[in-house]
Image (cartoon, rainbow over the protein chains, first blue to last red):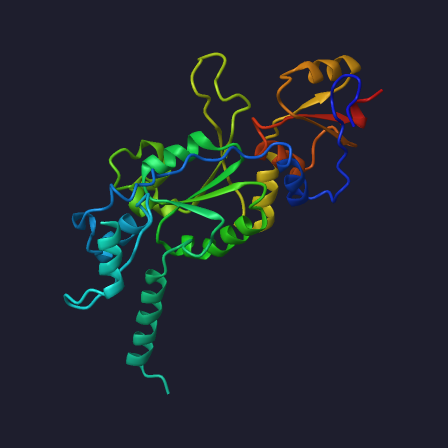
Length: 93
Length: 215
């Protein structure tokens, strides 16, 4: 209910815990949404086969976690690529 | 029967196990820092009291790991936790930010520095970004002692109202910001309310009205 001074008074009646109060206050002061970390590419832009990286053990974290886009991991033996991987690459590439 | 050779093999295996286990890998409440750029972000970016543990792969650090993890898991809502791997940082050329990682102090690791965020983001005297206060922890490596130390240095981003005039000024201040008025029976806020003022810093304007401060 709005008061004469223009303020709406809302009383918290929940438990006195950090989590409950945080949840309650989030309704009135939501966290600012973060900017997307990577621009989504249009289908036309696609990805080039050159962007497909061979994952080396020592570069695993850098390649997988240091990437701002969606990462598709393809495990293969010798030069036998999985059919779905090739299809995905040709669809988006 | 365990022969001398078997015993040596077991001991060697145990040593290998200790060295293969990367410290603080298993805790989601602790941010691992392995370069000075990330550590600089820790120093500049926090609104919460931040416990920064400098460690290396020595036996004292291994012994201390479960204590710090317990501390982080139980207090993750109140503080932020960072573990700095000095074995990696000391190879970083710009390691002035982590003097505790200097190889000549390696025998003194682990060390904990608590970073207390400044009340104002910009230092009014220098007009530059305000630096956090650093509190070096000296005490027993126990959850209870760490917890007590942290509580003593916990920041709170609120002011206390003591008069009707204070209340009127508060209501008129920053009209676009939602306001929170806390009624407490002590002048000092309990830890969970202090933590809330950190969590909602810049999002809410918080004041408390203490019955102790009321005549």
